[in-house]
Length: 253
Image 1: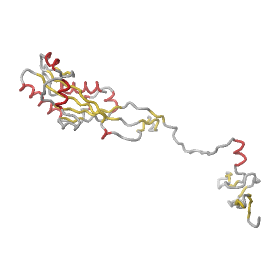
Image 2: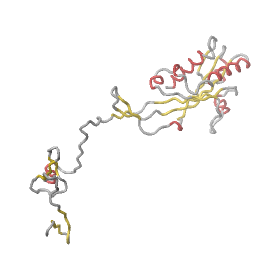
Image 3: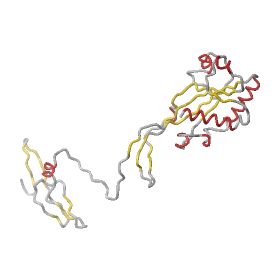
Image 4: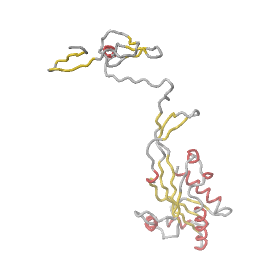
């Protein structure tokens, strides 16, 4: 993704502020040794910092749909990373450098995100915005003077460009089959099939559509019978006296 942002910025600058000019766009570290080799007008975009944009992090999962609009998979939302570029202009005269920086600044101020027509590769395929900011105050944990000191060069007028690029590499979780008109059947058990058969109800009632429906809560092993009138079988409860289980039915023990 980083190389795609590099190429998008190069294309943007060559198409707008640098159109028609013989000005190179490079991404080298602007060290003292590199500056000694510059012999033509050059715009340098040095990527000096990469860190996650925590304010743009999302939770949960995003659905992926097929042609029929059915969810077929889920994946994590993209995580954004801030790519910080130090933009400098290199010519023989400071006035020309300032003119170049001014043109670059006016170009970047027109956009709150990378122009969609300049994106390529995976950035163009995912179809999400790539925000960018320019010339904002640096974070409290660093300053531009520190960057120049680390490069071993002299402090030079520059623009700080931050591009928040999405990273879409994440696991894909296949979705289960869709629920049809027949619904789902659930069964909760922790025993073998033959043991479950002994506990399943043996009393039934007749539904309005003529189908037999089991009546749950009846005593296992009770003789099978149908309640055509819709009434439940004779209620039974279970109590425990002195640690011995006894059954009490209506009318006596």
